[in-house]
Length: 202
Image (tube, rainbow, N blue to C red; front, side, top):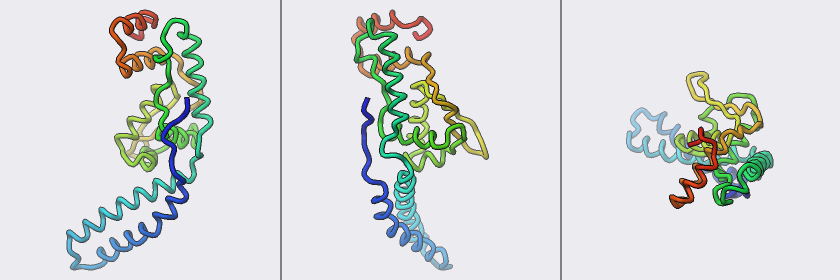
């Protein structure tokens, strides 16, 4: 149940990255102000500044996030307990584990929790993951845990909203099925587990 992939101190990262980021941005600005600036030099400066900005803003956002989100841990514990209550006597424990406990999952949840019942732009969430694909995938995985997260469009972009802290326990069979796949369950064992689950889960 422990959340994995702990991060270094984000405040230290922010203070370390900020001076170089400032110089990189000033370098781009200086080239933009030159009418005869070489295009390749400008592109190189832009790409360098873009990378530093992404790393700096990621560190800055993380300074506002808790080192550990107890609510995330509590919800995962609730889910694990409910899975054990429902299926602990009939399904091997290795298929009753709660997935998606990485630090990235925790940080995304923490950002949504800070603005619970308010839409959070996908662009802001991407600052934490540094990757749009990872943001979409990890947020979808949070929903697969039964978390009440909805996606919508607002202002021309995607937004995510954590509407409540109520877990949708109807998704437990799907979690177990995914565990069967991820852990490459033997065919006979897989058939036995599926036979225990509600018919709709198959």
